[in-house]
Image (cartoon, rainbow over all chains, first blue to last red; front, side, top):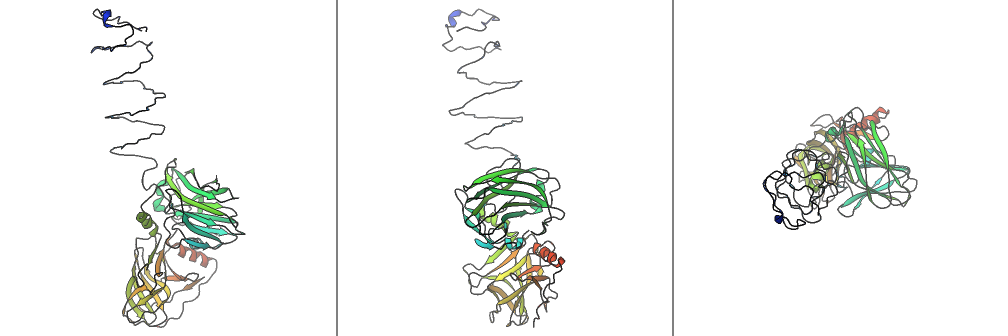
Amino acid sequence: MAVPYTFGTATAAIPLSQLDSNFSTAVTIGNTAVQLGNTVTSFGNVTLTNVTISSGNVIVTGANVSGTANVSTLVVTGSETVSGNTAVTGNITASFFTSTSTFGFKNRIINGQMQIAQRATSATITAASTIAAGYSTVDRFYVYCTGANVTAAQVAGSGATKNRLQITGAASVTAVGIGQRIEQLNSYDLAGSTATLSADLAISATLTTVTWTASYATTTADTFGTLASPTVTQIATGTFTVTSTVTNFSTNITIPAAATTGIQIVFTVGALTAGLTWTVGNVQLEKGSTATSFDYRPYGTELALCQRYYSRMNANTGVYTAFGSGIFSGATGGNMYIKFPTTMRSSPTINQSNCVISDTVTSPAITAVSTTFAGTDSAFQLFTVASGGTLYRPAVLVANNNTAAYIDFSSEL
Amino acid sequence: MYQLHPNDAVMGEAQSVRRLSDGASIPFDPANTDYQEYLAWLAEGNTPLPAEEVGQ
């Protein structure tokens, strides 16, 4: 082995006996500065202690750590940029994290997993109906169609995804849409940034194109208009080419600075005719240009998020479950105080099924509901009955010996 | 189709309208989208049914 530079600046004699012919034994260089010439291009099996790189760049090309790399203490005092992917199997401890896509609660879509279905797990969607009527199965998503009615149903998912929304087509259907309107308060910060929309999509056969469209409320916050007369400004639109296998698709959306009034995301397909099914799940809209993993949130948390827009108090197993209390305002009606499960987006539309108002002497069935005073946390509601009430007698709003009884509140967008 | 609600003997003037398709009570809140749809329906020249006569 050639020795590149042979101690030409040594200040004392170095006995050659201390060196063997090829440095096959360990060599110790004393506690002094050592400079290696440029002709030295590689080292093998080197152990370094207390290495300081004071300037210049360190370039590592094609370094593979196949075994275990132990870094007992790694301190990065400046900025460290890793442009590729980094996999860490252990724990990371840090005083602060920043991320363009954030970690938890990154999904601006509520109930993107289609797990919450307070209204029903299956419903018929009437062609050319209203958005209000389209809120009929999984929470926060409205479904609409043209040409003929379709069926929307919460179905089982696969893998980590518990549920998806599935639309079953019918003869003469010309188009189907699934949309969600994101409240201004939950999308304001997206304005002027890049967002990423992702979703699991599949169509059983024939159709291969799912069109996505992002819009924002044009003038008034959270006012998107009707299906017939939308009051939105389109942000962007595009298509996904889907198959019969559920696949996750994603796209970047440049949200304009003007989009501070609420955002609407709509997926549409064409003629979903008889025998075809369209499956949608894990819908996510997140800040940043990267589609990250789906934001699985606790069920109770997701339910509470949904209840801001729609909530239903069910009798469940209690056939006389109470929903509110108040007084009879006469023989044919009673005013009931009702507390909503959570603060709602607006004064809600209120309805009931299979309820009575009862003073424990008489329990006349409700024939109509009207709002006397309603806020976003509670309502004082007039329930009309055919007869049987006694003016000023205390009464309660209860299920009419029926586990299917409910009272619901809607302030959907 | 919609129907006006009767006034209440105790609480006074009705603050909502009834949606006949499902019987829901829609409050007169401009932020309520059902109310917005009702206003759009009125703007098309439609008229709600009058309130039912209610005895007390």
